Amino acid sequence: MKKQKINNILNATIWIIQVFVSFTFISAGLFKLFQSVNEMAEMWPWVADHPLLVKVTGVFDLAGGLGLILPNWLKTALKFTVYAAVGCFVLMIAAIIFHLSRGEAENIGFNVLIAFLSGLIIWARGKNRTRVNNH
Image 1: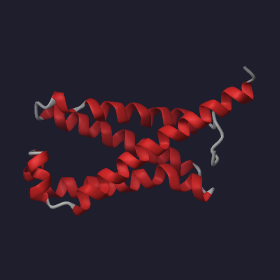
Image 2: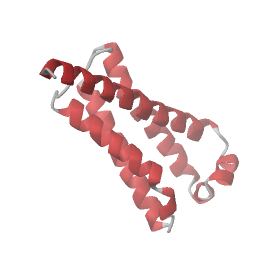
Image 3: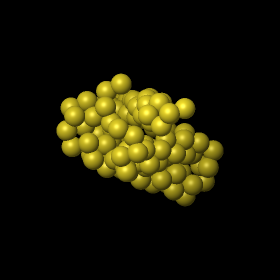
């Protein structure tokens, strides 16, 4: 394959990953911000002990999710996509540590996946390995 074709495939793959991770963070952020603490606590028992934490992480989730796609769509300040991916990665590492500290290792699988995908975005977009455009 020619280098350009490989770059196009990588770019499209990273775009798909960005949209998936962005959707994940935006939906989680909206859920955490607008769902009642009691309803969330039924699903996630730790929320009852940390209601402010869940609201704060909801704001970070929403900001991270928007930051993964808005700079590209607006074609401005593209470096913010990388910053958002770093933020999402750090959030997932913090979530993993939080769950492990509570003896909830069985709950970290999705966090590990999203951390990995955020790392791929950092790698691909961080050094201009792939161009960022609307494919």
